[in-house]
Image 1: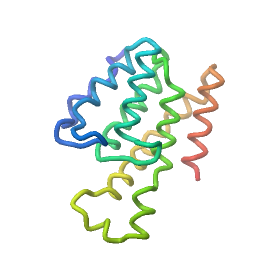
Image 2: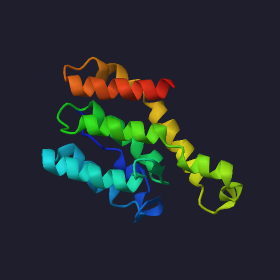
Image 3: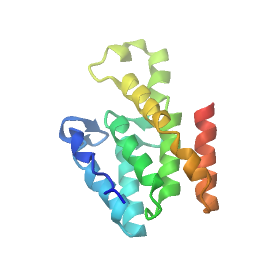
Image 4: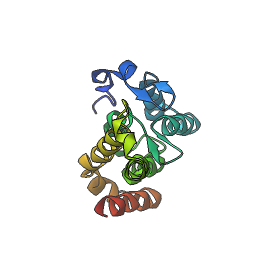
Length: 157
C-alpha cells in the first residue's frame, strides 16, 4: 500500500492562509487524521474543519489545496473518521458564502484576498475527485455509504 499523504510536501503550506493565519499546521492535522486513534483523528479533523471550512460554510485560501488529501483519506479503510471527512467535503462543496456576499457587495471582488476565487477553487477541488464516490458507495459501512450518497447528491445538484 502506498504511503498516505506522501504529496503533502508539494504544497507551500507556509505561504498560504487558512482561517487562523498560516496554513503550516494543516499537514500535521492531516497526519493525525490519517494515523491517529479515533479520538485523535476526530479532534484533528475538527481543528482542520475550523481552519478550512470555518462555521461549516466559510472556506479559505488553503481549502482547495487540502481537499485532495481529504479525498485520499476518505478512501483509506484504516482512517477512523471517513464519514466526517465526507461531511466536511460536502460542506465545502456547498460553500457559497463569499459568492453570495459578493453579489450583494461587489466591492468584495476588489479586495486583495480572493475570497470568491478561493471558494470556487475549493468547490472545483471537491468535484475533481468525485470519482472516489463509486468506491465509497460500494463499502459495507452503512454510515459511510449514506455520507457518500449525500455528497454525491450535493455534487449532482
